[in-house]
Picture 1 (cartoon, helix red, strand yellow):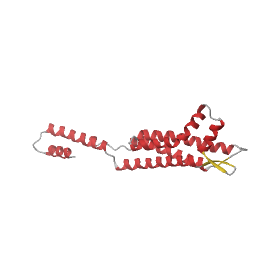
Picture 2 (cartoon, helix red, strand yellow; picture 1 turned 180 degrees about the horizontal axis):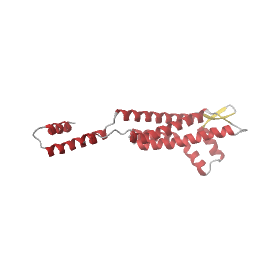
Picture 3 (cartoon, one colour; picture 1 turned 180 degrees about the vertical axis):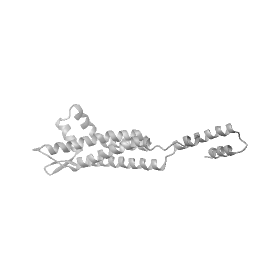
Picture 4 (spheres, helix red, strand yellow; picture 1 turned 90 degrees about the horizontal axis):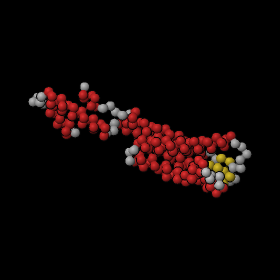
Length: 199
C-alpha cells in the first residue's frame, strides 16, 4: 500500500513528465489489481461462507443418517453399518458395484472428512467436487432404498425411514453446496480495478 501511495504522489507531482506519469499509472493499476486478486470482497466472502455452511450441514446429516436406524427386524432397529455387516456375512455382496459400495461403506465417515480437509486448505473447487460426489452417492442410495421399500411388500423386515431420509436430505444439501462452492467463486468474482484505472 505504501508503494501505491508513493506512485500516486509521483504521478500527481508537477515535475514528472507525461510518459512517466502514464507508466506510473499503469504500475498503480497493476498493484491494485494484484491486491484485489489476493483479497476477498465482502459479498464474495459471505457467499462462500454460506456455501460452506450448506456443505457442512450436508456432511453432518449424511454421517448422522448412517448411524440412525434403517431397518426394523422384530423389535431390533439396525443402522446402515449393521445392515452392511449382515450382507457381508450372508455373501450378498461378492462382486460388482454392490460389493464396492458394501466394502467402502464403513469408511463413509472418513470420506465425508475429505471435503473438510480440502476446505481448510482453501481448495474450494476440490471441496465442491468431493461434496457433489458424496452427495450423489448418498442421495441415490438412500432415495433408492426408500422407493424400493415403498414399492415392495411382504419383506421379512421393515424399513425405518428416519435413517435414509436424513441421509437423503444431507446428500441433496451436499449437491447444492458443492455446486455453489465449485462455481460460486467464478460467478461472484469482483471487477478488476486495473480496467477502471486504465480508462
